[in-house]
View 1: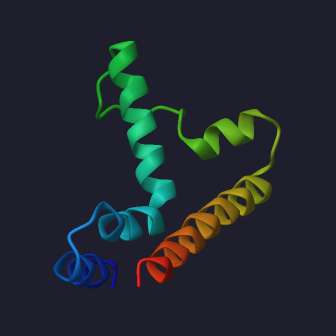
View 2: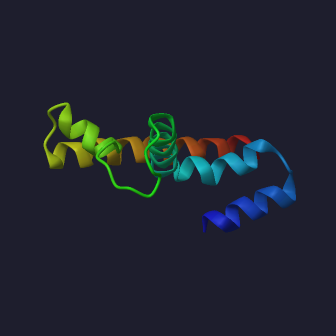
View 3: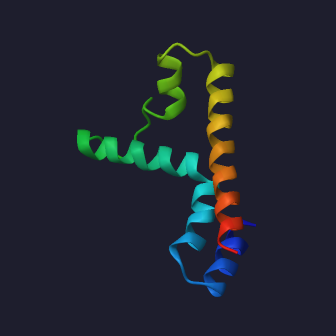
Length: 92
């Protein structure tokens, strides 16, 4: 569905805004992956090696339990999704 929104938006008007909608809808996993990969590159660690620097690990180190961390991540993902819907409606 996100691919259809991106392609449809790209054919209607080739703007950065039409490409931002699907990226924002999947904002949390995309930004988490980018931040973790950049951190690994800066520290000289292999990109394919697992570590505990993802958002959920950081939240749990800050004192949240598993349910609280996941609830917080759901909230952030919902905010990204709402922002993508707002951008989709604004561009029309």
